[in-house]
Structures are given as C-alpha cells and as structure tokens.
Image (cartoon, rainbow, N blue to C red):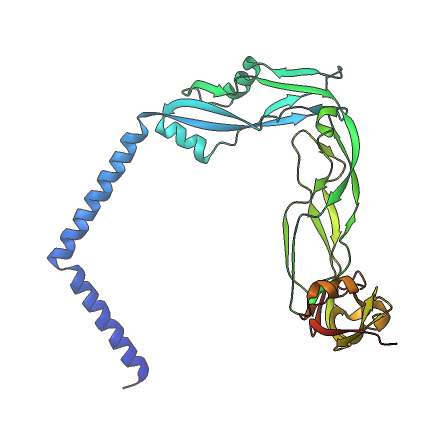
Length: 335
C-alpha cells in the first residue's frame, strides 16, 4: 500500500471518529445549552443598551493666534469634561465612532498688554451641544468658563544644564566638560516668573553603554508659563578609552628645620594613574608631586604617615599610590 493511500485512510478514520463524537447525546445537549446561554446574553445586552446611563466625555481645547508678546500666568485648560445622559446604545456611539471637534479659543483680537481673556459658559456649551446627539442630555461640564490671565512678556537669557547620568562600557570614561549647544537660551515669561528662573535643564536622560563621543539631541524641561526660543539642545559628552600609566615620584619633605635630617622609607612612590589614551604621552613625572611638611611629621608621632598627591593635572581623576604610607626617621645633626 502506498503512503498516499495510507494517509487517505488515516484521514477518513479521523473524520469518522469526529462525526461519531459529535453525534453523542451529551455533546448535543452541551451545544444546545451553550446556544441558549449565548442567546440569553445577547438579549440581555440589547435590553441593557435601551437603559439610560450617565458618563463623561472629554473634548479638547485648542488655542489659536496667541500673540508672542504675552505670557499666561496660569496653566491653560487642555480639555473640557462633559457629563451626559442617554441610552447605552447612544453612549457606545460616542465611545467608538465620534471624534469631537475641539473648543476653539481664538486670541487674535487681544490688544491690551495685560488682562484676562475669557471664554463664556454659553460659548463652550454651544460648541459642545452641536456635537451631541439629539437624544443626549448634557448634565454639566467643567470648566464652566475659561479665564486666562495674561500680561506683557519679558525675556531673559539663562544657561542650559544637562540633567542625567552617563554610564560607559568597561574601559571607557567621560573626559572633559559636557558641551551643550546652545549653552544659553532666551526664555520669555512675566517678570515675576523670570526672577525665579536661573537655569533651564534638559529632561532627565540616562545614556547607557557609551564607548564614543556622540552628539545627542535632547528635549528641555518645560516650565509652566514660560516660552523658550528652542525646545531641544545638542549635548556632547566627550568619552574616551582609558588606560593606565605608572610613574615613580619622589617624596619631598618641606619646612625641615636646619638642625634636623629626615630619612623617608621608601623615598619614592609608584603612582598608577587612569588617564585617557589621548593623554598618555602628556603625563610625565613633572606633572605629579608628593609633598609632606615637618608639621605633619611632628603630629605623626613616629607612626606610618598616609600620603597623597599634592599636584596633578585636572584631567587625572583616578589614581593609586603604592605604598600609600611612608615611614620616616628624624635625626638631629651633629656638628
């Protein structure tokens, strides 16, 4: 028997077993019961949609032709919340089919340098009513009026600071100062608001797994009641691969009285610095120094004295001294 004929017989046998299973009495009863359940649920949904319900709708508010010479002292409402009542079927229509037109606030007619621009309750209600079904009852809405206090705008130049964290891959570290372009921006607001602002920050940003210097375009944090000449800045954080360089530096003791001699053990210290690859050749023994004073030796009481670098380039941030302590002997000179 060929494989094709065997597959046909297997398929026919499976169909026969399925038909036999569906013809059993219990399975028929389960299907009938499920059909009644679904039918009952459908009738319940239809009856529910004929009942009246209350719900809330959100209608956006859009501001047009805002003069650049004014600033708002309060946050502007972004939406109107409407409480309505209607049958469930009508409310479903709002949920799935309706896109509401915004309440338009057109400020092109403003002429005064300060005052309050108002949108009346009647204007808002008219905009809302035009978009509701005839059967829908509007129970209320908030805000019932839109009042926008405004005043003449002033300007001020402030620095921009990066707000965030930089995490580099192993063997890489940030080098130098963060470069922000532009480093200063002009902001516009009321005089009272401007007096409280000394800087503008970027939105908090985490830069992860960095291994090279790349510019990032980062948004600025918004400030209520403040307009900015730009909403983004370019941030460049110099990142370089780091290496190690070890130098041997002598320990120099200062202010030793002329009738004393000092012996230091060890007289020289191995200093291992972590530095950018580009600075490897720049670092020499003359850039580092370890100085101690006679006063420190006197206070030490013949105990080992902890030491540290007293001179290093600003771009050296991490280093290690071996050893980190010295021993010494003070001797009076004999003449």
